Image 1 (cartoon, rainbow, N blue to C red):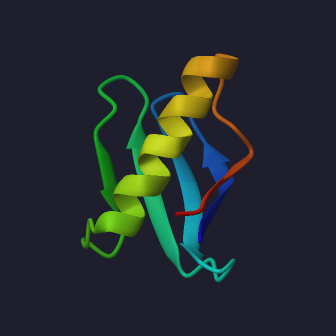
Image 2: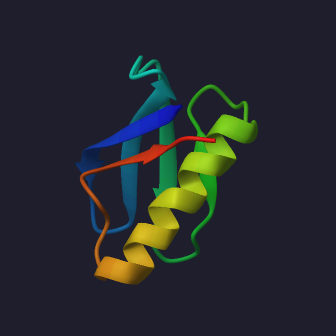
Length: 73
């Protein structure tokens, strides 16, 4: 299970802490204009991709960035 919680939002980007089993030990950064997604540690793996997709899906449904999301496979 990968979980994420919104920790900062600016006009141009949004940041989420995320990790496995609610251990928020990584940071995902999303550019709000281009939807470029990166991690602070430079490692874009399946956990980062899954949580980014979940955030984008919630954004499409709600019209805003969610406070948090969970991805469970």
